[in-house]
Length: 108
Ligand SMILES: [Zn+2]
Image 1 (tube, rainbow, N blue to C red):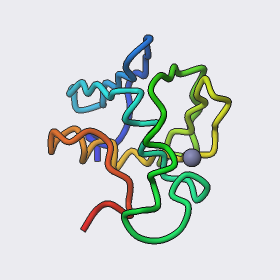
Image 2 (tube, rainbow, N blue to C red; image 1 turned 135 degrees about the vertical axis):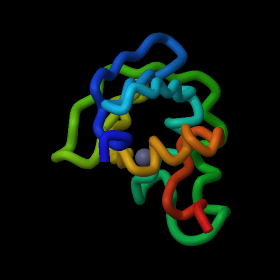
Image 3 (tube, protein in one colour; image 1 turned 180 degrees about the horizontal axis):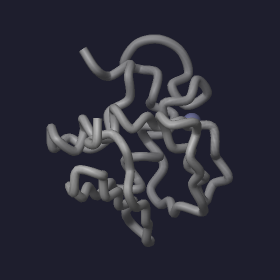
Image 4 (cartoon, rainbow, N blue to C red; image 1 turned 120 degrees about the vertical axis):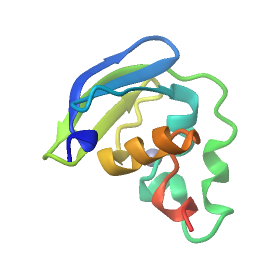
């Protein structure tokens, strides 16, 4: 359980950095997080074509984040997009797997 509870959350111009309660530190590329935004608007429908509307984004910064309940982070990006809810479970999984954040619909 400790591996999906954040102890500390920081960000800079390029990355979101989460230190989990089990001591592991994970860094996430902001551009990937934005492109992989799991919200319905960004995913745009069904299947692998869905996320292409975010593929064109070349630059992004993080403006703020907030915790959603005990299970996720809501990120506000510099394009004023804040609909994405990034679950700790998938953030941690992506870090452990070395893929970075991968949204639910891109997981098998
Ligand atoms: Zn989105």
